Image (cartoon, rainbow, N blue to C red; front, top):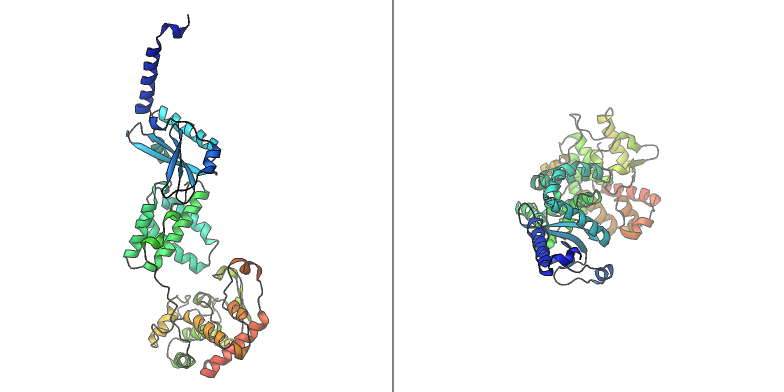
Length: 429
């Protein structure tokens, strides 16, 4: 007679029941999830519903189908330490296959049998936001113009690190992100909310690539559903030739610092972004070829930019040379410092143009007037946009590499002559 003949069937059943109960209560296995396994065909056939739902593979492994249609493997178990149910995200299907998800389940079950809570064990490898940010900043720096990089770092340091710096990135959920964005908005800086949200998405995408997280949580937050969008405002500017005439003459006749005065006139004639004016170097100017070449690293579009020099602009630069001939930068201040981003705007404010004109606003002024006068100067809109350093998006931007340099040389001379006709003293006597 065999062993099973000696022990009654009822006794074996009783022992089996006690063993399973022990595993469920002491080792963290969820009995309700010990079910028939799922198949790849079944997973592929699943369609999203109005609410997310789960199907179960047994042993704590489940596949959650989000409303967006994404399918995520999760492991649900009862902590042997806290006796509370926990859930760990394993990965997104099909990046994580069913077979690999089952392997992960087996590894997690082994930890449970050893009395270890897998989620608590992860604390040995905490990935705090403050530890991730330095690497992200290094990566981000290679892809942005210096001014944009500086602005982004400001939001990261002032807002993201203040709110999330000490948090493990894996423990931050979409509700945390939503509360973070509403906190920024409550401080009256709505214009920062969008940038902060986009930077969070980029930090999580960076972390996802490095394996710190399995999902880009900030992508789950619909910012416009919780924070009203504020209409963007253009930089203050004038498009009236009469008002522009008064502005130019006010600049020329003012007693503001000569190098600041020259920087403002140069901005009006070239309509460069203020950053490119402030950091313009003498070695970027070729007086023989009558051309400024700004390297791509300094451009917002990450594309080298050419600025044809009109006769009037050459005179402005010669005057600046008399003041700063020993300096590296064209418009360096008398104290030997690079002009700050507020210097030109403050000068305009002192002249009475607060809320009426900014240094950046010269770009809007030039764009409007040049487009309105195409029938006079005859230069195509594409050349105007290229001189503004605007780049088309999408496929057109990829394939259209036309520089229109001949037209732009003519355009810049026409524009300078137009400004000179408004105020003949736009160059110092």
